[in-house]
Length: 84
Ligand code: SF4
Ligand code: SF4
Image 1 (tube, rainbow, N blue to C red):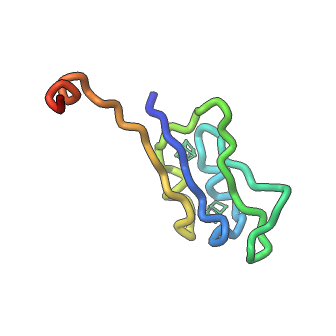
Image 2: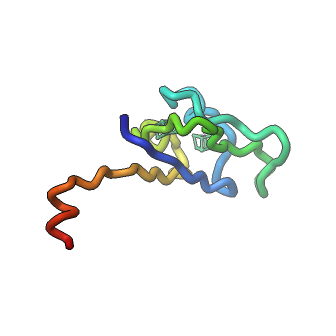
């Protein structure tokens, strides 16, 4: 399965939880130990086992475009050989 990670622009997040609900891997939570400049508990990636797949469903769900998704792309052996 593909591996991914996300970065969340905490200062733009309004803590609406739409990304938390949307994530099929359940790896997004709202912070409980801090608020952002707007006074909201921001969303954050909590993924100690690396279960994020980079599916980008969270980014599509976010109404404030706070989430950037990175997905690991496997390098094919033939491509690697061609690059040598
Ligand atoms: S990219 Fe997919 S798996 Fe990763 S945090 Fe977003 S919704 Fe969840
Ligand atoms: S959907 Fe966007 S604004 Fe809402 S909690 Fe997630 S990152 Fe924050």
